[in-house]
Image (cartoon, rainbow, N blue to C red; front, top):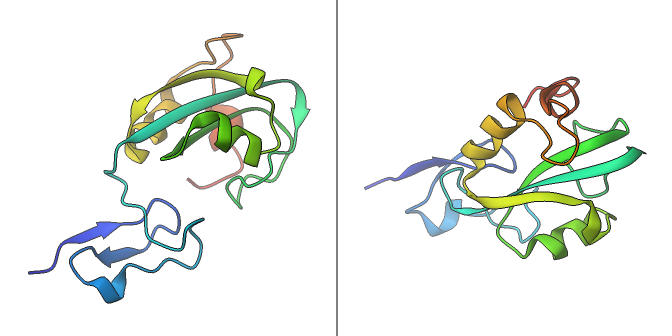
Length: 125
């Protein structure tokens, strides 16, 4: 029986019950990451506009905020972004779907600025 899921990294649908359909050419570890998988949502705050390495390909403009989801330690993911651990403004458990809601509806806990204009503005996430 097929178990269709959507990959949070490449946005493609795949059959989670088919071992041959699990590869993702975009994902860091080469496997699709389902949008309903629990992990950690994190908000990075930068005092001045910063390009975020290893971020969403569509989000290439300098930004003062970045919202992401990871299944690894947040400090490790921040380092992959080229950010200091002190840039981590918040982190909490959630799914990639929860991450989208945070981008749309929440503000930075450090400075109070709405996250949506920067995190959703130029990208079609």
